[in-house]
Length: 207
Image 1 (cartoon, rainbow, N blue to C red):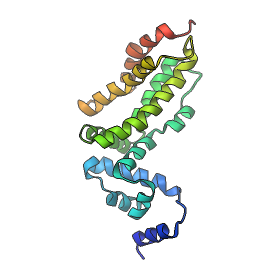
Image 2: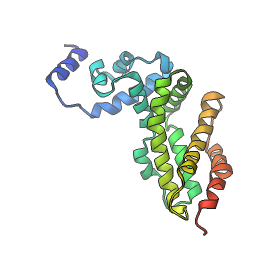
Image 3: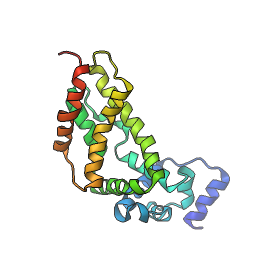
Image 4: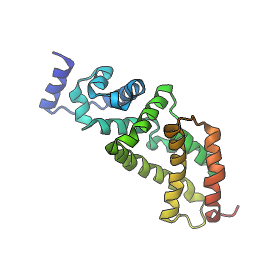
């Protein structure tokens, strides 16, 4: 019996999902993305790379877009960022670390996969909407948790928080995906020093 047939039998019998396969599938998705880009990626190709049947993927993700959104989120998951960020550091250092961790993959193929996704966003509205809903809300919440202890009133107005959350991702996305220039920690530091910190200063505690 083939892998595909085994997976179809699992679906028919209602067996619980083997969660250990999720990361294998997500990593395989990133590898295929890095190699062939967004338009070249197929569920069949991911299944072959992960050595699973297509049914295994479709039981977890209803579409290619949903799979790619989760794959991109797996590179620097916000759920683990709190463990990587040092809350004993200054606000500046935490903001620099956050933007660096979110946008710089630890592996070359991760960075290539992110570039492929970014290049596809202007041409695929469903992908753009899904990434916005998934990434933006989590990024905004993380920014809010970082700046809150440094604020006089403990909060920012929604409009100010929206702008603060927009600046870093907007500049990095424009630089990497639209004009094709690399970015490094020094570039992130310039964003934080010239834009984010000056914007926050009127709201910060006096120290």
